[in-house]
Image 1: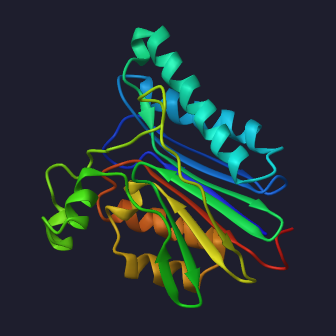
Image 2: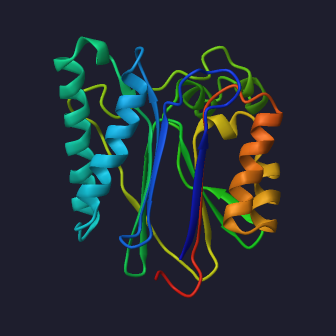
Length: 236
């Protein structure tokens, strides 16, 4: 198991509201992109990854992963009610947890998880966004989606409501599979073909650095966070 992650504030925003956690020991990989208020975004994303890392250590199946996400959602929501400075905060979430030969993943919001199999880059997650909804119903084209004025409007985020609908999916990992978790600060700046070229041609650490630098070169309009996970020699 080889994993590397990094985050960058970008060139426009003053604060970095992204957060991530990597635990190869417990096979936990988390990425969150916070939102809301002066301090809320940073607080929500940090709380999400810290609390989830603790809860996911001892989970045994898909149901317990779902319960962990629901518990953290309630904690963030409750905190937003208790502190007016954090009112309205929330965060996206991309999560991978490996149990034996199964890889479980989930997302909330528009942070994504991709899988690179050979040379094929496959988006595993579906964006919980208004623009993606418009795409799915055929109201706009993919080209129109790129510059849509409501591109950043989410239909779902962790911590914004007391209860949240969570879908945990699973795949059976294969030797040399590569997984990419990223915030929209990357995917709004780079085309998928460019992402595929970088991660298929470089080791994890170099790939992460190249992706972030490329996003910065394109303007770095948002915080950028990337995790690259490669399964080599089994999930050890």
